[in-house]
Amino acid sequence: MDFETILVPLDGSALAEAALPHAIALGRQGACVILVRAVEAHPAPTADATEAQVKVVREAEEYLARVKERLALTGVTGIETSVWYGSAAKSIIEAARFRKADLIVMSSHGRSGLGRLVLGSVAEAVLRGTKTPILLTRDATAPLMALNGPVRPARESARVLGQTEAELARRREAKQAIR
Image 1: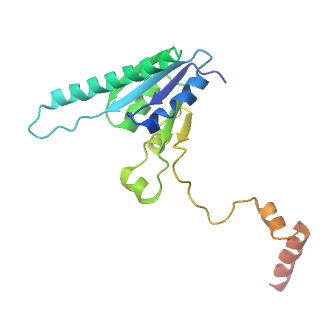
Image 2 (image 1 turned 180 degrees about the vertical axis):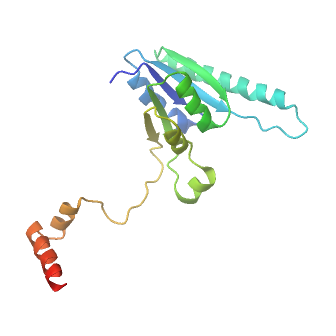
């Protein structure tokens, strides 16, 4: 599948940048890869709100320019940058719509439980807020969620337990006969 526009949300972290190799590989056929950074200023009550907003936008622009330059040094071209002011999820969704992205490539912390409840999940909010396909990567060092035993299709589980399909059918028939 060929993509024309791939959106890569970045937040300044190494985890977010781990999505870059995936986006670059998918975009090798001439896609425009757009690096997006969402920012919000949270100034102190006595600070100038406008100045704080300008500062965070400028810092985001500088960060994206550095990432683009790093990619250019490795021979990657066709990179654009875009800073959006607002919450991360909303900005990503709007940027994808505005730029008519074919794909969003982003990383997730892979949090679950209380960490996810408290911190939320930008990836989940983006998934629920856009029709644009998403390639979600996760930190290779993040712990995997423990499952209570292996997950297998029902037929495979029966075979593992030493039961054939015929045995299972006989047991079902026996239970029905008792009723």
